[in-house]
Image (cartoon, rainbow, N blue to C red):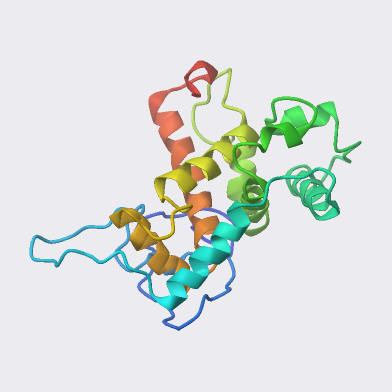
Amino acid sequence: MDDRGGSFVAVRRISQGLDRGNTCHSTSGSTAWLGRGLSCVCAQRRESDARPSFDLTPTQEECLQRLQSRIDVPYDSSILEHQESLRALWNAAFPEEELRGLISEQWKDMGWQGKDPSTDFRGGGYISLENLLFFAKNFPKSFQDLLRKQEGDRSVWEYPFAVAGVNITFMLIQMLDLEAVKPRTLVGATFLKFLAENESAFDLLYCITFKLMDNQWLSMRASYMDFN
């Protein structure tokens, strides 16, 4: 992934450089934090490796709690900040087209199920909107490629972009077991190490997962009926 050009150029082994610190680092959309041998969030162990401990350091615990605070926030169409985030998403997706309202048939062009996107956030909450907006702002070319289905041999009936985004947020939360007090799987424990080194780890992983999902969609030659 190349944050300079706003597009993905690689998913696997991007860099070996990581900042080591004692607090969550709030950084830009760089994916260098993925580099330390992590390939698509699959941790490899040698037979001689000791069994990993899933106990959290104070830093990891703090970062997990902050992420859980984001996860716990439902989307609320009466909150001005949520309204503005939704408008910002539209402007990032369709800068050339003025949004006529937060309830509008226009939203279907982004892949929402109806004219009111707020009804689609039930599964992912406000963080799913934050994820989409992070993707649009930090990797605009890849975001636009996926939104407009510009890569590969596409189906006549494609998956709904925005709804897919909400589903990816929900899926990652479940796969990484992020609502638990501490990780219960190796993958979850590995992720929290990266979260402690980069506060945007979940948002960055979301962007990569969206791209991987689209690649899988193309390799399956899938159509809308295969979306579930």
